[in-house]
Image (cartoon, rainbow, N blue to C red):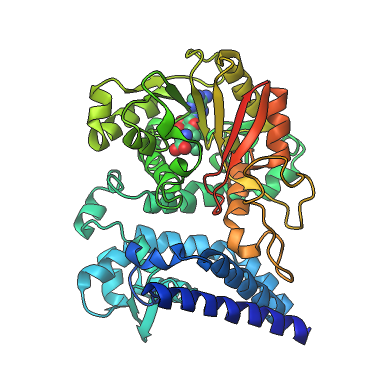
Length: 471
Ligand SMILES: C[S@@+](CC[C@H](N)C(=O)[O-])C[C@H]1O[C@@H](n2cnc3c(N)ncnc32)[C@H](O)[C@@H]1O
């Protein structure tokens, strides 16, 4: 056992040395956790060898923690996991990060934070102490809290007075990260707490219907998340959801959509149909990078309305010229646009069980020409162990995404890649749906008349593209 502990510790120290050398060579450094988040500080992640070293260190550190911490403590800590969501939501909704920032200085006493947030300081302090123990906020003196790199991301960047007086529009013009925190911490966390009841109840246990997701149990009626979002009382949630999708496409993915399929090669004769395109976050970088290609964004009518408003702010020329249009459409109905160059299906299939995902794919197949390309953007699930399912070299692009971590680390890189597994369970909670492995995609595609031809990898597994052509 001691040998394993030393092995893990060595992986961490070797990784730290690799990162340090790369920073020295490039004149950068790893930003201190105690300072505010600054995107420029992330430059070190781009140096050669750093991203593997970072993943190795994260995976080894978490494995070391699981190895060294008493097992009952680890299990109890996991049972308390809901407290991460709960405390983060309170700190976010109470605008704690903004309150501390606006006070200037090094930090603020919890009594003053609580007074501005209209919260009981005796309760808030315990919430902030839980977060600070998990490296979100600092307690720099007894009861005095300051922002750090993580907590500063809770700050929307608008004045407190505006955040408190205008909670509906406060996310407009933001990266989407805070909007995602709002949606995850609210209905997603609540829905997810009903997962066991949903899996256990014979009425829902084996269902593929979206209305039978844990989310339906949370709202107390058989309704999909999409229908719920369109209820008049959920106006703020619908708008926030649209903004939240931005974070997947931009901040987290770092413009990854342009690093996959060669969108720049498309001409004015080409047409991209962004099926279920939301407010058009995914295609925005494509429209900006390629001034010729035509794009139609299809979604539910209420969303299309928001999308047009969004583009009027961000890229009005594209709308004015007619090059980019929004169209209400139901992807369970026959596709109205025939023979598009590209059908883009970004973060759609993971919202649906196989029964419904295959209907979406079949509708697109019926509208495809022999030259149509289908591009699916969804995370690709991997087994925790080595995956023998896809032979090396059989799917172009896949090998560079599925490189196993070195032993004794988990082959799937453990905590360094854990976000995908969280996203998968989020889909279960909200939609009775799932993320998929590559063989699962292949089978689903073949059943709907498509052949998987390549993967455009995204090492972070946020925006890999699965490319298919008509069979
Ligand atoms: C997870 S979002 C993805 C949005 C966008 N593709 C992106 O990557 O940012 C899923 C989208 O599917 C849309 N949607 C749900 N049901 C739909 C349907 N039956 N027809 C068309 N769009 C639908 C939702 O309104 C939502 O915008």
